[in-house]
Image (cartoon, rainbow, N blue to C red; front, top):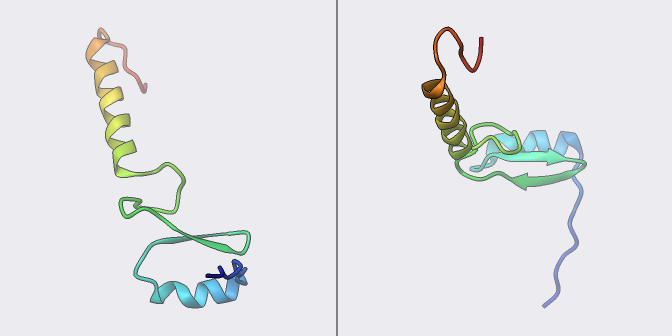
Amino acid sequence: MTSSPLKKLSEAEYLSSEPLSPHRREYVDGFVYTLPADTPTAQAGATSRHGTVATNLVADQNSDLLLPYSVFP
């Protein structure tokens, strides 16, 4: 069994294939990577789990503070 080498795509090839793709993908230096299903946007680390953890941390910090202080003024 032989493996085929990875093929670099031009930006035009990637953009023309993007509407046909059933998955969210990211184009980096000629290579196309499939993003996880729970990734809302093409941003590294921006998953729904990440959002939940960040929200919980902020809520916990706010609950420990005395007024008039807040995490984000």
